Length: 102
Image (tube, rainbow, N blue to C red; front, side):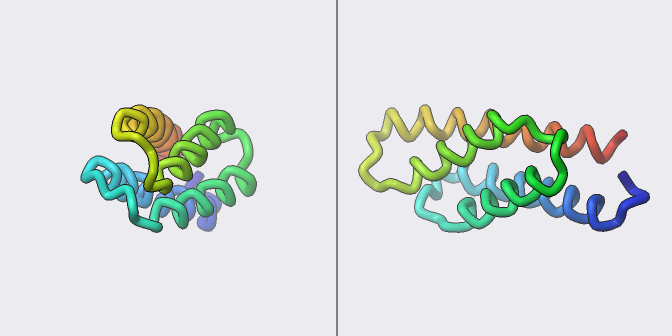
């Protein structure tokens, strides 16, 4: 990984942004637009470097993040979507750390 600088930098930046989005979500800031920007970067990363992130987990995080932006979501549904998004983002973080270590 470290022999390809753009790949290494993109992985480090995405891992840091993943931690930031997790922190933002656990503070119950559902109205923020920054997770949408993060998800755009996540999708670009997944397309640019295939085989690192499981597509179903990435898409689950993206869809749950988009659904959380709706203001008419019931509180119980928001908790379920936060749990799904949190698990998917933890997987993304784990996969990125696994790539950085290997």
